[in-house]
Amino acid sequence: MTMNTETEYLKSIAEEIAAGKNASTNKANHHLATEAKRLEASIIHSLNSIGNFTQRDTFLFNTLSKLVNICDLLYAATDSLNPDVMILMDLMTAVRQITPDQIRPNLKLPKAFIALYRDDWQGTWSQHSGLMRSHGVAEKLIEIAGIPFRRFTEAKHTLYWGDYTWLKGYISKLEIMDWESADCNSPEEALLSLLIGRDFNDDRFYIYCKKYVLARTRKISGKRQKLLEYAECQKLVLQDTQTGVASFDAHANSVSTRLLKWIGEEIDFVETHEREKPLSKFEFKWNVETIAFFFKLLWDHKVFGKVSLEPLSEQIAANCSSVGKDEFQATTIFSRFYVKDAEVLKTVEKVLSEMLEDVRRFG
Image: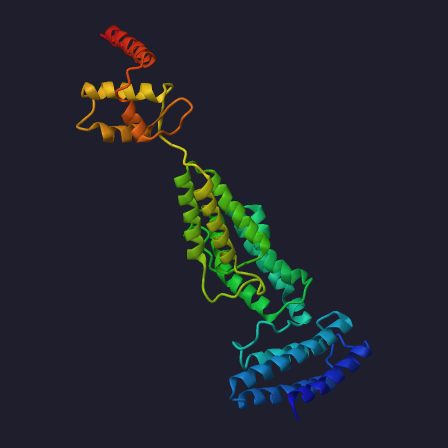
């Protein structure tokens, strides 16, 4: 007799109970309890007897799937964790314990399983969200971080064993979180790091991360510094990414993959389209000819150290800007050193005369 046939008898007993709408809230059905006990021994014996991993995996998945359906049938009859439902829950627990690490992620969770632990999950999240608030984590991020818990407490969709193991791993990380001395710049960054590490690839978290990166880079002036900030964010994502961790949404790309791709595109855009803005240039009201002539005068009178005119022209181009022109080439400066335009001479002479008067007044 195959196990599929054996579970049919248990199913027929459950169907009779559900059809009669008389599932006891105080005492389990005797026939159901007896058959569940017999079936437990038979399933465990079969699991221990099958040597081939693939066959054992298939047998385990098919058997548990049928038990989940039977449990849901009984739960739907009274919408409560009555004794009959708990018999099925205990049976599945006993079976899972034989091979606890071999449960397929796509095994459907019984509705009763979710109802059984709902209050615990709500309490756990209440505790951790309270800690987050006390450490100044942004309310929007706390709301997003609570999505995995709400997925179970609201139970609007079919949930699977992989969803449960993901939540367990998430809770384990929250339990050991040291908010006071986390290896991050702030508790908020510590939570971002944790969620990236757990591959929380929900769209709402991905969007929050993008906005967070944009907020950091918008505070930065200058093309080079902005590229360095994007690179820093890229490095942090890579450092937080953990290999072998199951995704929150098994059907979507990892949050790290999406963030790294997006940051890479932002870097490409800045490199291609954004001009470098000088951060420390002296902004002269003079044109380039006047600037060049003035510095040539200083050079002629040995104001500078030992420097030839070509390197001097490069330094002027790198550190000075003129009216309506943020940048000019060193060759342009060099070619203007010997210009003797009348307007240039007049402009420089006027400034030097005024400076000389100031010096004499102080003397």
